[in-house]
Amino acid sequence: MGRTGDRTADVVIRRLSVFRKISPQTAAALDDAIRGRITTAVAGQELVTEGDPADRLRMILSGWAARYKSLEDGRRQIVNLVLPGETCDAQIYLLKHMDHSISALTPVVYAEIERERFEALIAADRVLAEAFWCETLSDAAIQREWTLNLGRRDAYERVAHLLCEVVERLRPVGLLDGDSCAFPITQTDLADATGLSVVHVNRTLQELRSAGLIVLRERTLTVHDLKALKDAALFTPDYLHYQALS
Image (tube, rainbow, N blue to C red):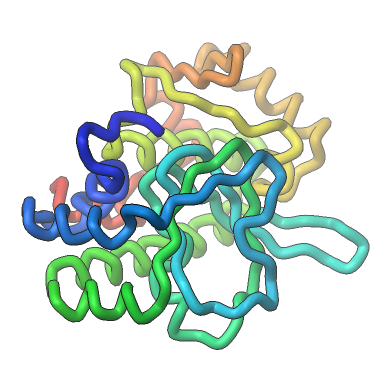
């Protein structure tokens, strides 16, 4: 579950701290809210399915998941990743039902909080409420960037951009090890996230390797020169809105 210390919610707290300064009291309240509400999923298992009631929110404590939409014939588009510490649509409970599915890409440990409990939690703490709203707005900005990725960046830029984004999203939750991080998803997952074929993804990864920009080995991504990878991807992290870190 990564570096959790004494609190179940530590990775979530580190994530929210990129948006607002989280006090020890707020951290303790969030930890109390999710303690005893932890569940697990195996790779490929759905955490929630399109059409399900939107009556709770889920926080990823470890592992990777994906938000996705699919067509009747099974073709799938991953519309965002959900990484450790991130919330699966913090405000989704305001709607009646889920308009997308969330599936575990790896074994996942996550917390579920019912609507009433979450509403009471954020009603009692304005800073925590703002942090969750900021996370929702950041998710929307990521979605816009992914739309730009699909519509205007070429394959090389698309894949490089996604790799840069993963690094920047894992950094504040303490899941970078020097210039390396876990990268446990498959080329099929990458294809579904970038709108490319698996063959095209494979070729693009080979090009990035040949350029000396990345090393992908044993489900680990190493980026020795992140600036060069960002330049290749036309990547700037401003859209993530990690304002508490600025």
